[in-house]
Image 1 (tube, one colour):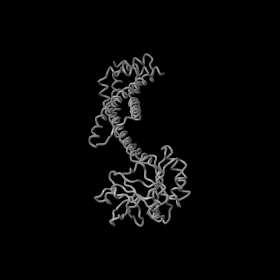
Image 2: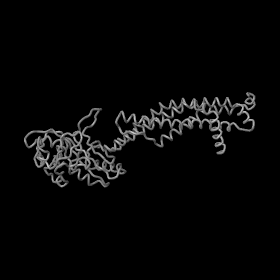
Image 3: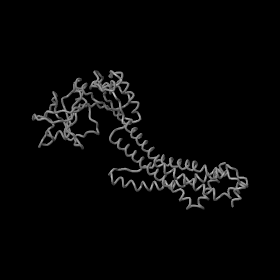
Image 4: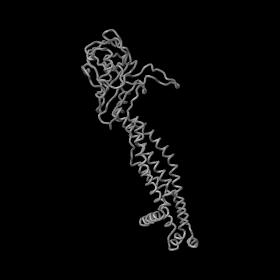
Length: 407
């Protein structure tokens, strides 16, 4: 059986070579269709890779975020909850210590307010109550950050960012703010450090979260971020977080929302999958047109080789032998056209990518994945079988006596 199949493909290649120009014209539709399909898929794969890289560089896939839900929906109306669980510094410490999977926890309370300076002037700033600052989020410029011991002791200290320091210092050096006392609401704190400048900053002041009262934290509950040591343990850690909150803090199952950045990656992947399917269906029209070309060249081949078919059947060839021969020829023609289309698609992306990079100034690259080549191969085989079946059946049903008489 295998020998017959191989002989059928060998004969198909011989017939293609004898009518090469005719075959090339007939498979032009497949070449263009497959070329467009390769171009679209490789560009979409490149876009997806770029999106994944952007997500993973701007956010950590190891992060598990806990956010309070202080509102509820009743009859599709959003209402403030009368009571809900929330985290303060003491509960956060118990929370952090209860986690068995290795992770680093950060609690963050944010408010926008005015801060009173030593000269009695005021500066609008984002005030953050934290237990610690993420190593990648801030680098000290002058002075120091407050320590975990100072947070635990509710020390009246603070550090500020470069923008706040410049506004507070005026014409003086930002170092002059270090050691001075600033006031936020009823909290007088001593500035002990200034952070290095970053892009697109607003004035920021960082205080130990232990300085804030339960009333302040309940009014605008802080969020918690855990940085898990191993990304493979994110889902297990998320489940532990949800269970601890449900058991120890939450008054209602909707009090907290636990999120991971994997959801963003999954959403992006779904969006690109949808885009890939839609564009593939649109470009697939060209492939179908190419399949009609394949059927056309095979029908002409059947007509031209009627006598040959008759002689083969007269010498004992069975219907399935003729059917297999023409199906093999159809698949071979389709694969040949798909290969040319693949080359055309790769060349097209090599020309398109520099244009996209020049217009958008984005480090974008096309991505050639194994999935693309597998899809192209499957498309070629399916097109060959679907559009080669009718000509093959027509050849197999020829009466050998009538076929020989047609010469």
